[in-house]
Structure formats: structure tokens, C-alpha cells
Length: 419
Image (tube, rainbow, N blue to C red; front, side):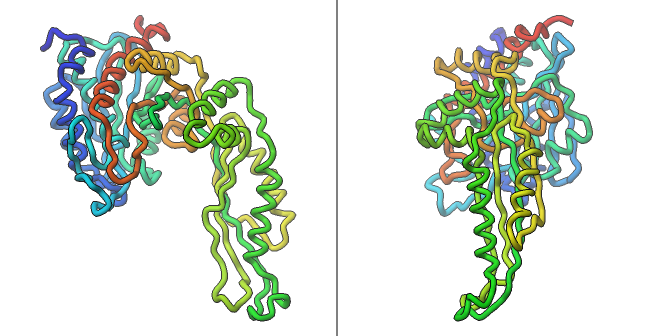
């Protein structure tokens, strides 16, 4: 055992953290296929000497999840969550080894910042408590999951369905920085994914007036949706207003303040897929479009979907073939969890920590909908999913420092340090 505190242990063992991050990156967990058996086994070996409870849980044998439990001084539980799979990579597009390479104070590799680096930081934070023989002020649960990058059911959804994530709060180690601005993500946006079918009347391409062009009908319907809904300002609740303003401040430097403001003040409507027609010289009889609509947290998605259905009903030859939707979720900007993460990260980095919304949604939404207050936080880079993805060593160390300090900060704010 060490005489150092958990935070001191993290700072003194930065090379151990670097080695662990490189060990995890070295194991290819590209999804698809998303096989995480080897990386889970490596983490189990890392944890084996520690006085922690380790459980492997899998509904797909090739995609196991790992649960690590550390007993604390209270009956409240803080959950750390991270995913072990990565998006695929094209090695020829990389100047560095996509399976891990350290160059000066940077670690390159697929998953370096999204998010094997943060997973390594979480594991070293856990090890720091054991090395310091320090019982955390709250119970800690670390869930390292599979199948996140493709939105599969073998990871977090399986754990939630099996009721294995009994926690009072959660921090997901997704990278939450962009162009030198650090943040904690405390909200996400609702979504409506529509598949529209269009029917028309076929004719020879030299006589288009004798037919009805299904693609023209479909595109006109999309434009009608944009005109009716894309220009209508959303009714944003007072509790979400501070998050919207922080989000505009955060995204403004990278996308422009007006664009950032419109992103959250209005629905975004993206035509992602448009298919139809058989030949250049034929009037298409059928066509299909897939449309992605996003709504700021707090906006009632079912109400908007009802209006969209009415709009589509007014468009000749157009039907909704398929639809899926979700409601945006948010934590209160001054909640104990948000305050604990933001204040701890600000103290560690010395920088402003924006309390902002994500532009999309992921596992945080699933956890919030399951009743677990959740935020995302990890220092990193904006090289997510890109060639030469990297993370600075200092970011890994600062992440581990935040994760080691967070249990005490959260316990103090929630009175979770007494039974």
C-alpha cells in the first residue's frame, strides 16, 4: 500500500496510466464486428490484484461487459461508464499506428480519445483508492460495455434490462471537448427518424409530363416539412434555457454563433437518404427518403411527430413507412452531479467548464430514462473517429484525477457521506 492519497497516486503513476491506455488501444475492438473478449480479459488481469469485485456479464459471448464494484462509506453509488468498442479504421489513412503509438506527450490510436483513454483513467482511479488503502466516500461501480458504437443491444441496454446498473448517478467518459474548450455534457436532443415512401406514375423520360415523378413528390414533401417545422422556433422550458445558452457559447467558436443558436432554437431536419428511379430516361414510379429530425431537450417529441404526420397526410402520394423517436433529456444545470463534475474539472484544469447539451444522443439518454442522473465528461481532443486520433497524456492524467476526486465532491453535495 502507498502513503499517497488517491489523487497523489494518480499523479505519481502517470506512466502506468500511459501503459494501460496503450495496452487497451493495442487490442482491436473495431465494431463491426465488435469483439471485446480480449480487451475484457486484459482488464480483468489488471484488476486481479485489487480488492474489488469484478463481474463479466454477456448476452453475446463475443461482446462481454465488465462490472467493477468498490465498496465505500455510504449506501449511495456513483457509476462510471465507458465503452470498449471503437469505430473501424483504415490503417493506410494514418500517419501513426492505429493500434497505439506514443509520440512525445501524445498517445495515438483508434480509441485514444473515444474512449479507451478515459476507460484507462477510470481504472487507474479505482486502482488509486486500493493503493492508498482509502475507502471511497460512496460505493463505486464501473461499467465497461461493448456494442456502443453501432447502438447495439449487447452493451448498456443489456445491463439495464438485467437491472445490473443500480446507481444514484453516472459519469460517462465520452470526450466532451472541442478546439480547446472543455465541458460537461448534461443534456441531449430528442430525435424523430422518418422513412417516407412516395408513389408516382411511370412514363418515358422524354415525355415527363405524361407521368408523375415520385422523386419530385418526395422532395417537395421534405421541403414542406422544412418550411412548416424547420422555421418554427421551439418552445424551450425555463429549466433548459441556461443549458441552451451555455451550448451556444460552447459551439459558437467552431460553427458560428448564429448557426449554434439556430441548432437549439429550431428543429434540425436532415435528408440523409434519398432513393428512387430505375433509369435516367424513365419517370420514377417510387422513391424513398430517410429524414433525421432533432429537437432540443424538453420539447415534447410526440406532439411534434403528430404534427409531422398531419403534414405528410397533406402531401399527395406520400406515406410514412417507418418511424422511431426519442425525447431529449437533461440534468438540471445546478444539480449536485453537474456541480460536482463541473467544479472538480474546473479546479483540476483551471479552465471554464461549459455545461452544455450534446447535439445528438447516446447512452446518457438511456441511463437518464432509466432513472439514473447522468452526465458525460472526459478531457480529450476533437479527433473522434478521425485518422490519427490522439489524446494528450496530460488529459489522461487530469481525467483520472477528476475521477479520483469526484466521489468526495459528489458525496459532499448529496450528503452521501453518511448512512
